[in-house]
Image 1 (cartoon, protein in one colour):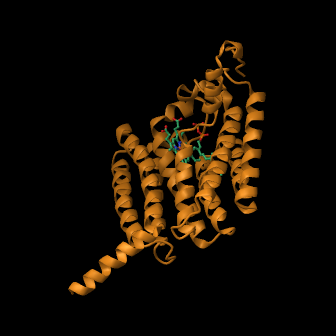
Image 2 (cartoon, rainbow, N blue to C red):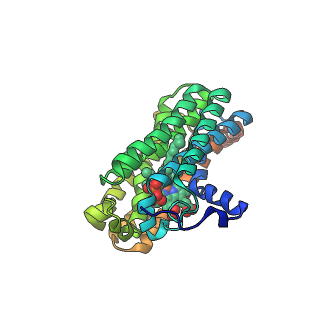
Length: 317
Ligand code: HEM
Ligand SMILES: CC(C)=CCC/C(C)=C/CC/C(C)=C/COP(=O)(O)OP(=O)(O)O
């Protein structure tokens, strides 16, 4: 195991703060929050209490940060051996595992308390179960042992959508589970496109990511199937569930069409890293814009505008 070679005494206060910040893998969190927000807006039929929004997004951020920090502690051996992750605070010795664990426990405690007191117990329990699932099921059980690691483990990344719905309604409905399913099904294309690009890094440390074990062709085929089911799942929110309307349908179909197109190109060019990279980058914009579409579609003003347009069309005909 790599032990510290950077003394904490050599770091300025700002550098220490920065190291803890990096432990939380902050670049992923905004998208988790956008899925939470999409779910909240649909659940609240376009009228979200701003204070509840603030509390839920803050609680979600703290829970995700806690989960990522524990993942950084657990994975510090492989993170040291991989090019992409070598400079993270743990493998580079900037933060000690014990300090990181205290930090993660503090984050989880504040998250649970905040959500339980100012949202509701279901939202708090769901966010906490997201941490437990990500650490136990993904990081501990699956990541190093199964090619299905990110498929099953990916459920953790879909939990924020449930947290959002629960925060607004205090329960979970079919629509909540469908948004969960959309993020769940989107995760394999999102991650395997990246895994194709960094396959050798994972192979080096013996992580059985799909491209390492089954090869590029099998991986792109799986990506293709998951992309298709993801797009189908996005439409179910309109029909039969009726939780979103025509504007969302148009957005979901346009974004989905492009997702399918990019995934098809990868299916035709399994070894082309540029095409894989394009799909990975698009997967992020896709989820961001899809959730934004959920929000805009749910707003009362959108309903008014669409009704006005429909009335005008009736009038003309
Ligand atoms: C088990 C499921 C997932 C795995 C294994 C995974 C893995 C990864 C990896 C390895 C990266 C590259 C990060 C880096 O270079 O440090 C990444 C990037 C990213 N992931 Fe995921 N991801 C998963 C699920 C999710 C989910 C559910 C979301 C949000 C809804 C998400 C959002 C993002 C974003 C926004 C980036 C880009 C970060 C940047 O700008 O560098 N991921 N993902
Ligand atoms: C509600 C709640 C708290 C949910 C937590 C969900 C969560 C933290 C999801 C993140 C999924 C993700 C980006 C995994 C990265 O994989 P990795 O850790 O294998 O990536 P790496 O190779 O960059 O270390």
